[in-house]
Length: 503
Ligand code: BGC
Image 1: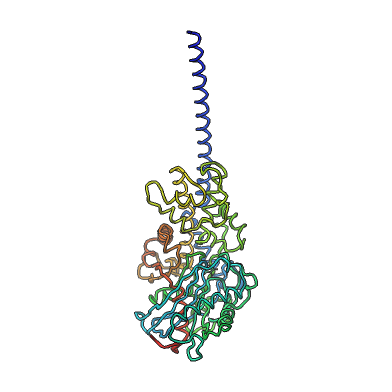
Image 2: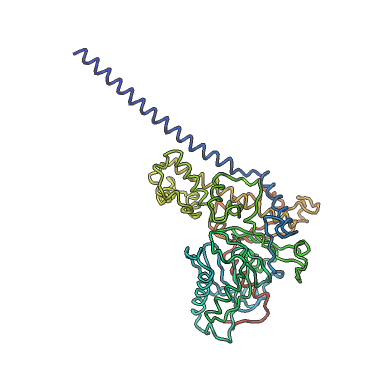
């Protein structure tokens, strides 16, 4: 009996030992995997670092590239495109105008009434639609007929005048958010598509002519009076309300900036023929590049797999189209290196399946157990993720967005430096308040207006770069629909004649 007892006790001890060993091994394995994941996060943090010194180098590099792009065609990655906009609207414009805006993810149509005073600007109608995915790689004919038919429907709703009546010609601004080499305010050829558009036969085509052709085909009495980049529309709108506005930036699906430059600084253009002595320059800053940009392996992969690889490097780090995909790539790498997200769901390998609005929702999730993060991960095929893993996902969103916002701030500071409004120019001391002029930068786009953390990081970085003495003179003003309304204003300011009767 005693022997049996001893044997049973020994067996139980052996079993307990092996169970304990298995548990310890499992725990060690889990810890190793967790360490690997934490290592991936640490690498990401390190390669996304944007200390102030590095941001200041970016500011200098942007100002230098701007200068190079103004000196000669192809002199820089920054195209520094002429816009033929020299006089910005001032509030005295009159008439009713239309704008059709083809952006990255949406298109909008608006009708604006201007009564000759700032306070009498009245946006009478706005329509916003998602761009159907099928259009992105359709044909020029399909794209422009789609735009023309949308415009036709919009105007037909007005009901009071026949859209094809010969007596009523409607004046339209075409806000086109892609790089265009302008030949006048109302004409210009597409240089290349960005943001996932890929209608190949269109590069080199006159965009205003294409739209005009589609409108004519439908017998619509509408005149495409201006072809305007979205940043230029935003600047025009900003300037209409505040004459200190000298630059505009779009943080949306893509990103870009424009600013008011002295014509004698635009050396590549011998005869810019402006009356004001200045011209708005569309920088196309999405294409900015510097070896000092904090680039990660995820950026490299994203670029290689994109439709426009080796192009738009800056945009791919700061544009709303891309932030979600960078985050997705980090999560995918983590799930490949460990099983913290469970078995790898195939959906996680789909490019662009995680959108930037989901990144902002996860980043700003303030529920104690990060329910929003859990919900979004579930959509990515990852469910039942422990809280500490959800926290890790929030951290990834933070690192990627913070880098984007800080680089965006460096971009703005680069423009201020180029135009001598960063407090460093002309031998003026930073501390001398008298020498600093109030400077307004108009900002538009969902990334800035809808993503609070992006906005806060950007504003904070801009303050840090400029220093408080200078930053107090710089106002970043957010706008909504400014690029469409501003484009219509440009038609108005280039037109003294009333177009259709006031309402
Ligand atoms: C385009 C720019 C545009 C920006 C913001 C970029 O992809 O190249 O022309 O201004 O997106 O919409």
